[in-house]
Image (cartoon, rainbow, N blue to C red; front, side, top):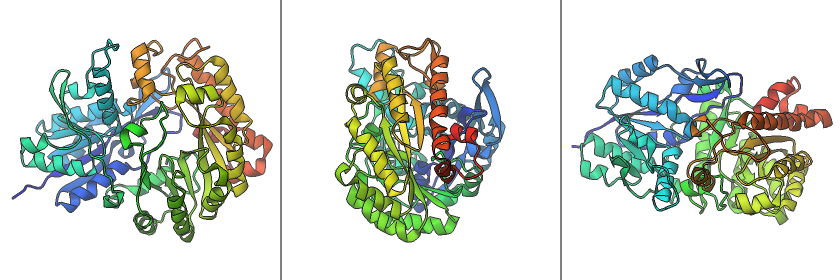
Length: 507
């Protein structure tokens, strides 16, 4: 008879700015893994260490005002001891969560060294991709290892889409079946220093096989109270974050989506999506839906089917993750009108640069510059607010091109702007370029990755602090334009009692 496991799923403490806007929402990945385990008889607990200790701020860099947000080691140890799990999985989405993930793993092993710890999430998937890439690249001179798995606190890594693979590894571990463990899709295990057992990833081709996210296992009321979901300015604090699809057909060099989720966009059926939305809107008294797809407008047929059903729900919704600017460009006015009629109050357009050379030669983004302004105007005419994403500080981008992008953006007519500093995310071509050419600012590394932190050298600037100040000033200037040019629309976006300085921090 197969044994049943007690499994603890953890999201670690957050690294953030003490006086900045730090965002937090439930982990969709863990909420998809949990019900599959429950269905097969295993006991599951989801624990968000950042949420549990949200008011706690441990200063880790006084000069730059950087803090670790979340529960302390003693109380995390109590959570682990009280639940007494057989297996713990720690999900790391971005590299700046690694420090706390390692510390939590250390705490767990002190509680009980027999607990098996699995490292999952986008970071380890990207790290494995980079390891494979650098293994065959003879130009790289650095030691090629998967750093996280060289730490004895982690027993395994799980790469790729882990919902169904995770069930396999849990059952293999609890039944002490070493042969089955080594067969699990996506498994990564250290054999010796620099040598690993790596299995091919599993891909969920039919997303309708995924369960409804286990929101009953997280403290939704605590997330609502904080109200710091993905979108910069929400209509409601009671937000439901939903993903309708996986994958993106683009090949942007700064983005890890193609390697993680693939370039073929897979969609859930409209019935499957609406089953989740309808039930959770009722159960959690939801006031707004935010779609976290990498680009929800790629498939117009599926989008329209979704819009038909969302219109009946009657809730505001938005696209905080960004959408491709020129999809269905010739009939874009029709598409945006349909989105607005179904409740979309704001669309985010991923413009990235105001220079065609940068779009073509550095980002490899299939985006004609001349489509950006008309797309913004089409969305506004349809009735939506328009937020825009821009990135500056790419390797190879000139000082003049950075300024051209900011000028281009500020003349675009968009309602709000996020000027981001290029972050070399593991698993991306730009990250590999930074590693191979050692383009880091002196004293900076992936460990310093935060919102608008500069990690790689930028033309025309003497150091990261100077560039960060430049970009922050551009954000403030750009996002105050709406207040000055159209106070009525500014109040519609932010609320009549809005404090402009606070709003700019959120953007």
